[in-house]
Structure formats: structure tokens, C-alpha cells
Length: 247
Image (cartoon, rainbow, N blue to C red):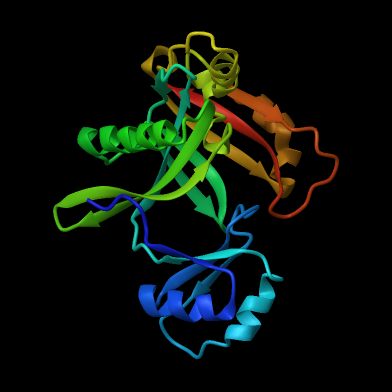
């Protein structure tokens, strides 16, 4: 079954027209590079007129892709590592909650998802890593889609690097995503990706002035605080994160 959303590359206004005809509305127009946290994206809604030239001008001539809109229930992600010899290790499936297009909370393991769907998500991530002959840690973001009584995942984005939704692994897994990345690129054996003590894990991003409450966070039992050393609070800026292990 299809495991990714439909997409068409756009390099000109004519490409835009053809892509829109093929994919339809609603759909999402994105830059093909350097987009993150909702930046470099524009929703093409089902209703209303389309001003092609104005829409294209918003992106300043950057290479684009038009993707079909996926009516998803939630976002999940697989953070995994692959070595040059093909060894593969995946952390448990993450469930991600966004606010204002920015990742706010990651919960592990993802809840309300069948073991079969979680295994399918990890298998898809492995297929991608193998097809790219990838070495290192990568994250594959996916939408959980329900169709009647069935559920499936649809690939939304691939991040070829350590990933924000994997920061919980610093305290929450036997091998962090950062240590796992070093192991993979150095050709060392991959570490155990199991959760620490099998506990549930929640990671909250500290966005903007939320990081000003760091003293109160440090006073909370079991809170693991990480501040990124950024000198200025700005709305929408990730300033750090806090992780909790939940028995």
C-alpha cells in the first residue's frame, strides 16, 4: 500500500499548474530544501482563487514540491541508525505533538497505535535507509491515517541527521541518538536502542520565553533539563528541552 503522500516537483509556473491539476486541492506547497517548523510551506486550500504568480513569488524562485494533503490523526516518527555494513537499530516509535507548526512534545512509545503499525513504520524507515545506503542516524516523520477500522502510516519527511524528536534518548534510551550516530559513522557496533528501564518518556521543547522558567524546571523531581545556550529568547525559537522518565 502507498506509504507516502503524492508529490510533484515544481521549478516553474507551468510545473505548478500541472502539479495542481494532478494532485488537486487541498494540497501543500513546500520548498524542497531548508524548510522546518512550518517555514517554507504554504497551504493551497480547496476553496478560493489561486494567484499563481503571487504564490510562486513568496518562495523567491526556490525549487518547490507540491504534496497532496493527508487527513492525518497525528504525527509519529522513527529515529534510527544504519551502519555502512547494513546494521540497523531503531528507537521506539515516537508520537509528536505540534503547536504553531513547532514540535512541542514527544511521547515514547506512541500510544493508541497497533504493534503491527509501529513495526510497519520501523520497516519503512529501514527500507529508506537501505535504499539510500545511508550511514548515521536519520528520522522519518510519518502521518498516522485511519480508514475505517484500519490504520496506516504515510511518510511526510525525512531528516538525514539526529532529530529533535529523538532528544529524549539522552536519558530515555540505553544508547542516545548522538552516541548511536558516532557509532554508525565510525563503523562501531550499534548500541542498544531500548528505553531505559522500559519506562515511558516525555520530552517537552522549551520554546521562546518558556526557558525562563528553568529554575522551576530544575526543582521538579525527575526533570532532565537541557538548555542550548542561545543568547536571546524569540517567539518560536527552540531554547532547550526537558525530559521526564515515567514509571
